[in-house]
Amino acid sequence: MSKLLKESKKKKSNLSDQRLDYPCCMYKIKSDTNIYAGSIYPDTFDKIKTSCLYLPVYMPKQNVRIPFEFESSRNIIDKVILYETTINPDLSNCYVYLTVDVRPIKYMKSQRSSKWHIEQIQDEGYIGDAGRTYIVVDKFGPIYIPLKSNFIEYLPVSDVSTFIDQTEQYGKKMSEDGINEIDAYQLYCFDQMYMIKDRVNYFGSEINRKYVKITISKSKFNRSHHSFNMMFKYENWPKITHQHKGTLNQCHFNLE
Image 1: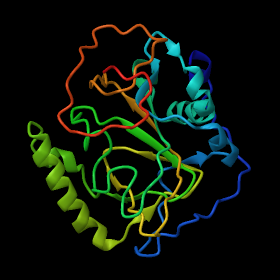
Image 2 (image 1 turned 120 degrees about the vertical axis):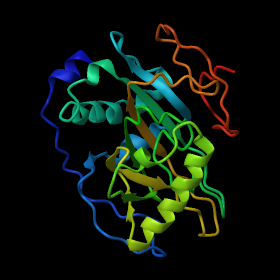
Image 3 (image 1 turned 90 degrees about the horizontal axis):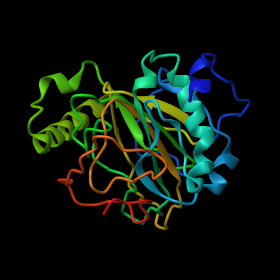
C-alpha cells in the first residue's frame, strides 16, 4: 500500500471500449464521463470465481492484505488505489473493502439491489461517512444517475428504512430526465452525489456476470455477515447484527 500511495500518476490502459452483451435498450441513455476511472482487461475476470462482501483488503497501518482466493482481483484493487491517491490525500487513514459477486442473474431477478440507492447507505446505513465506491462488471452493467445536490443532507439519518424508501422515490423522479449505464470492463467511481441500481434480467435465460466493487471509507464495516479477512488484526471492531435479510451465497470467511 505504501508503495502504491506514492504513485500519484494514473496508469493508462490500451484496452479499447467494450460493448455490452445485453444492451440497455429499454432506457434513455445520456453520456457521463466525469466518474470514469479507467479500464480493466477482460482476462482479469477469468480467474474471479469466489464471492465476498465488504472483505477488508487494507487497514490503516497494516498495508494491503489480500487472501489467496481473491488474488485475481489484485489488479482492480491496485488500479483503484492509484486512482484514489489523486483525489484523496487521506487515503492511508481509510479502510478499503472488496465485494465480489459471481452469482448468475436469474430471469426476472437482479444480482444486486434493483432499487435506486446511494452506495453504502442502501444496505449498510453508514450515512455519516458515505465514502467512495468503485464498480466494474464484465457485462450487463448497472445504471446510475448524477444528483444535482447532496441528497442525504435533506433526509433523516436516524431512520434508515425511511431513508431507503425516500431514496428510491427520488431516484425514480430523477431518472425521468435520463440515466447512464456502466459499460463492461470500465471502472467507475461513485460518491454520495450518485444514485445507482442494478438491472433486472428480462432476457429469458440466466446471465453469468461478474461484479466487483471496491469501497473506500473511514468507517469500520462490521455487520455480522460481512466477510472476514484473517490476515488482519481487528482492533475495536464490535460485531453488529445486520437489520436487513439477505447475503451472498458464497460469502468468504463469514463471521457467522
